Length: 397
Image (cartoon, rainbow, N blue to C red; front, side, top):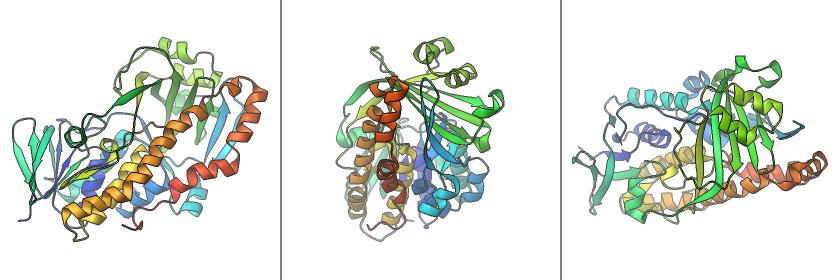
């Protein structure tokens, strides 16, 4: 029997890659360090460049049970709540880009992928198996597990996240730079909020030294909250599971509009993490090994493309590994297809930090002129359309 394709990591990217490969007839084994398979975190935005790929994998029915379809995205001013329409989503997204725009709880999304992979092959996922390194020859690759076991396959895909052990062996530790920014996140049941805050829209609150993003999840039953603030604190904890306090969150955002404070007051547990920036890699592949998703191109969340990039990687990888090309050539083509686009997204996400935090937003008059200049329709379309128009199913490889 032909050796399997090995995947390190059973997160969103690893599971999507496995499903795409299995649907093309490949045998896959996924090694995941966690003993219990569940995804932490909160909200994920899936643009049409990502949702079209999920539709192609036959996941529409399962996803529609858990996603929310926002009607639009709006900008609001941190101090007064003044609102500017950014662009419509909903049916407009389908008409313009051929696929919907969805928002989804990361755990719900992970559960859909997990169920689909297990239905395709109940033995594909092996939890409780941390991946610590690999060896390769021209003929195969051997994955080293934390318990001392070794498994051999024809390909190894490192989908083991931002602190990837596979990437570290391939390209070194890499330098992560604290961006001087911390982020608060939390979830609020919509029923706790006043009616005007239950609209199915995404809001991006623009401010001086910070911004806030909110959008609905789980059919509109939850509101996702992320509050980003600049800080001089000497604190660089990148964990998504560090619990903070309402008092500390309000110390950072307590001067913001009452709608923002109402959301914070109704969060059960506000979590806090530091935002670290990394230069995008120039290479994703070595021989029979490659990295993908956050292992390849960790990004700041300010273009809402982290999960979408992982989905694109998954489909491009599956297409190339199914092409009949020798594995090293297939992985080099994957690298060539993805390095430029993902690097542009990583850098664009960093640039949006400055755009969302600006001294001109300190007054209503200055904010109006700033928004008219920086977020006029032509500029917004130039920043986002190229993201959503990309199709990993048809892009030349």
